[in-house]
Length: 317
Ligand SMILES: Nc1nc2c(ncn2[C@@H]2O[C@H](COP(=O)(O)OP(=O)(O)OP(=O)(O)O)[C@@H](O)[C@H]2O)c(=O)[nH]1
Ligand SMILES: [Mg+2]
Image 1 (cartoon, rainbow, N blue to C red):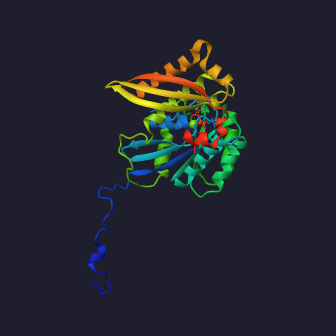
Image 2: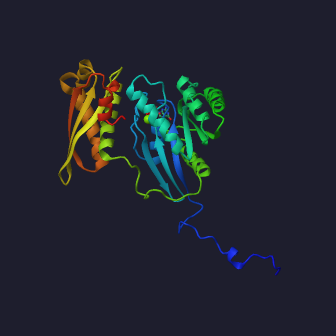
């Protein structure tokens, strides 16, 4: 042994901060972004195997950041679903876009979701510009292959790919038909760093039940209403009380901006509100595992989407 050999202490294994740290376990924060209506929330729900974020055929469905946690044996992903990025026309729209933008710096990886059945639109280019100006890796998810012709898939995927230099990989899939979602999880494992479980395995979100209830009511309103009415809807949960071991009383107020919208929301003899209420109630019961008495009322709040105080009261700040 020569004199220059290091003292034996240097060969001691380095103690790990995490006692049971397993380098083959990967984890991280994955932020899901894209223009409205491309299927971001559908994709997150499909990956989780559970509905956390509401979904509708209308653009600008999601208004807040929605956390969904996926735990597998070798991986934990904290997804952040975000509102679609678009050119906002009022205070609510500005809040929504700001929510999406603010999620980006926390990401380990960004999932950029596009609708590959369509060529990029201005809002897709808006998203692409934002993603090009930040350093994080981007995985391009080309959704809706079930409705894309082979020609459209080929032509559009080229264009989407060319819009962001930081794309590390891409994948075509259908969130709705759950085609390609397992392959996406494999890619996520590959691109996420080794890391610990941040949340207990049984936790699927950090969102409060009250908010999920309000969202389910808003979803049913979005599904059944048309024209400008859906976007003028906000839901406020005014009371949430356990009346007995298996019965919860929920008092909710649906806000719209005009008397005419209130009329549409109520429907003939209150039939529309009844339908929205009963569909929402059965989903809320399934989610809570309890019977629910849902007391739904409608109130007009003129121009609430442009009213800073009202937006704050509804939590859109
Ligand atoms: N054909 C088809 N439709 C899809 C697919 N994924 C989502 N959709 C539909 O696209 C519409 C929008 O889906 P969402 O998941 O609400 O879209 P989003 O990107 O979250 O929209 P915002 O919250 O408004 O930004 C819904 O009608 C979905 O059923 C898909 O893979 N194929
Ligand atoms: Mg959404």
